[in-house]
Length: 72
Image (cartoon, rainbow, N blue to C red):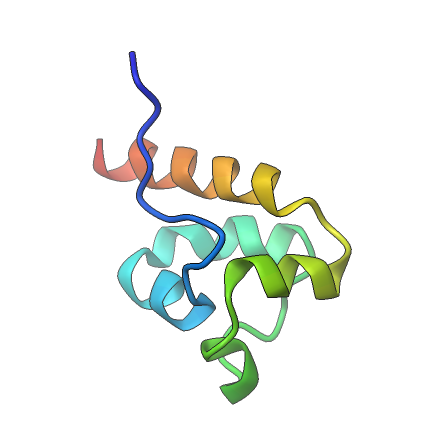
């Protein structure tokens, strides 16, 4: 079965949270607590991961899994 890919490293945090609110638990769990601040809304997932010292590829995979789990 092919892995579902809803978002990638270039997806903006604001877009991610708006379109896929179920992913906030994943982001909060890795320390991204300012999901609604103006700066984060225009920041890519890759950049946010870099700032928080986490592997963007792993986060993208986890976020996509969460979305697929909720939306199939």
